[in-house]
Structure formats: structure tokens, C-alpha cells
Image (cartoon, rainbow, N blue to C red; front, side):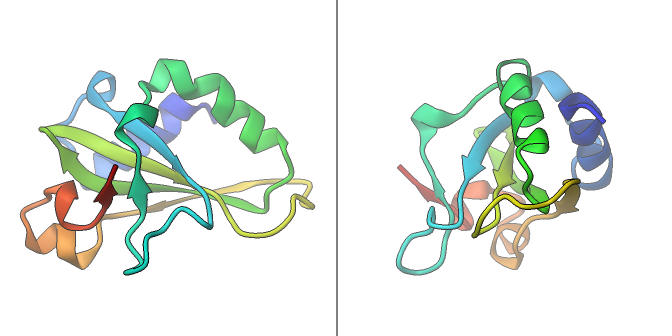
Length: 120
């Protein structure tokens, strides 16, 4: 499946009123967490789906056992979705793409991504 198709599934589940063209993507590696365990989101690294599509295809072909598309909530009214990468090497013939919703802190804050990420 393409990145666009995956994002469409994720938005349908967690943010049905959102449009694909409003999505902001950020890549979060296993070491991209602050001291309190929050994922670090570098605003300068936010990407539109069309700009990230080639990178996503490359990740799918890289041999990771999984990638996680995580809906981090809304950032300035736009869906923030992280592409979370596993710790460890690339040694799998196929890559599973998993979906997850916002953390409890973000859900409790009405979907505001700022409640559960470390913005830089």
C-alpha cells in the first residue's frame, strides 16, 4: 500500500474530519524521545505526505520488521502523524505497517498534540 492509502486508513480511524492534504508527518526513531519519554517532534522536520512518500517507500523496502504510523493528535489544527521506526537492525523480508492513536495525555487534552510530544 502507498503512504497515501495508509494515511487514509489512519485518518478514517482517528480523525475522520481531517483531510489528507492537511497531514503533517514526522519521523521518530527509537532514540528520539526526551528524558520524560515524550517523542521529540522537530517542527523543521515536518513534511507533507507528497514530500515524504518516497522516503516512506524506501523505509518499507529497507528490511524493518515494522513501521508504526501513530496519530499524535492535532498540531495547530492539522493532523500530526509520526512514522515510528523500531530499534535494531533491518533484517526482515517484509515490513508490517501498524496504526496507533493518540496517547491518553493527548486524548485527555482534546486531541492537542502539544500535550504529549516535545516540540523543538
